[in-house]
Length: 261
Image (cartoon, rainbow, N blue to C red):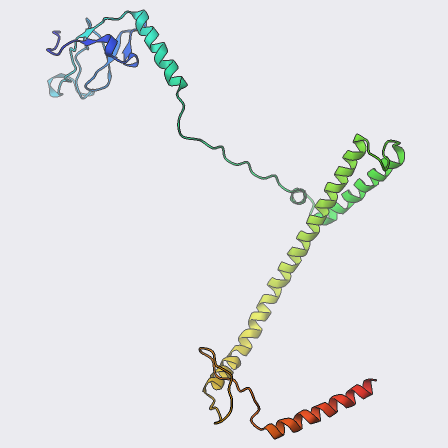
C-alpha cells in the first residue's frame, strides 16, 4: 500500500482521544475524512471505503485512506496527553441546572385512618385514641414527681405532644365530616331547586314580558329604567285610595298591638 500524496499528519497535532497507542492493542486512529476508527498499517491509515458494508470497486474509496502519520511523540507522551484531556473533561461542569423532583407531601393522619380494614368513619376511630392519650397523660402526671406546673419530664412532654396531635387530628376529621355532610345536603337539594325553578320559570318570564309591554298612564312619575328593563312607578295611581288603605292598615295594627298587650 503506497502512501497518499497528502502531507503527513503529525501525531502531536491529533487530539489524543482520536489516537489509540495502548500497549497490547492494535494501534488505530480516527480518519479525518470519514471520522471513523481504522487501524494503522506501516504508519498509514489502512485503506477503507466510505460505505463500510460494500467492499471492492463498487464502493468509493475514502480520501483518508493511506494517509501517512508522523509519529513524532512517544507512547508515554501520548498517555500524558490522554490523562490531561480526561482530567479537563472531568473538571468541566454543565451550565444547565438539573432540579430534583419535589417530594410528595405526606398523607395526613386522618387519611391514614381511612386506609384501615374497618369501615367505621375516621372520627369514630380517632375519639377512642384521643381518650386513651388523655388518660395516659393523666396517669403519668399522677405518678411522676417531675411533671408539675413548672415543667415536664421527657416522657410527659412526649405524651402531651401525642395527645395534642391526636386532638388536632380529631378536629380536622370533624371539620371534614361536616364538610362532607354539607356537600351531600347541597347535592340532594340541587334537583329540588332546579325542579322548583323550572316550574315557575314560564310564569316569571311571562310576567317580565307583560310588564315590559304594559302601557304607562300619562302624568305618572316613573323611576329611571335600566337597559333591557321596563320603567317602575314610584307613586300610586290613586292617591286617595292609597291613603285610605294605609289608614285602615294602621288601625288594624293598633288593634293587634292592644290584643297582644
